Image 1 (cartoon, rainbow over the protein chains, first blue to last red):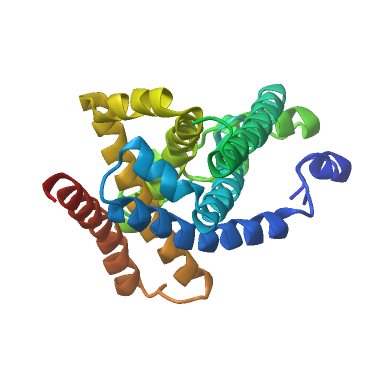
Image 2: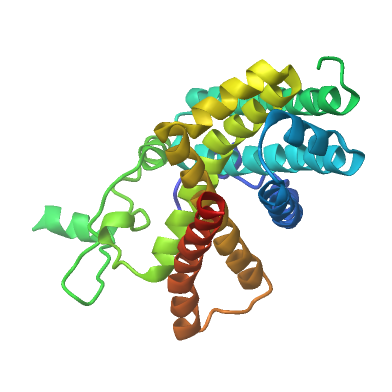
Length: 128
Length: 164
């Protein structure tokens, strides 16, 4: 080695102690999405048509709404972790990286909230 | 002579045995380290343009491309679809009208490919995670098969959707 002082090497460069959790969460969500992704694909393909009434009636059923909610949560979680890896790999400048990761987390939380709200509204039906 | 000796001391050269050469380039972190410790011209790990292409590289790159495509475009379309469905007849009609146009079809077919590709190479990753499939030949075969399976499933899905 002989490159830099110990404190310099460790500061912002050492282990964050959260890599294993990230890795495991990536795998758990990937298995969930494997199931939920094919479920949504087959469900939509299996509908007689994709008109508003047909799709809404299907999506409003308790099982469909639950599946869609789980899909929204798992896919935004998985996407957030995947895009975090992309940013960490390609955005090296510290301030830019911090800004990108902040925006990513806000977008992921906002997307999840909107998706879940939409599903609740579809299932419990305020509007026609 | 003195200068050349100094260069040989600080700069490791990557030799791939086939005439190509990793050379010595410096990254930002490298410059940072150099500033900190006075070291200079440290070697960095070889990057894309000096690797010999192989199927495992291709499937890895496609995994990232399709995954990030799904994360950005796919999640936007999912949220739009759910929002349109929650909004009522008119907003849903607006969504399906865009989805039915040529650009909408390109996006949807692209997302279908991204889903199947990311799923196929994702399953490959899960298999690799348990320690299987690292034998050179085995690994290369599945690296080639993975994107081909994804293309076949994309074609089959859209053939079913458009022809039924």
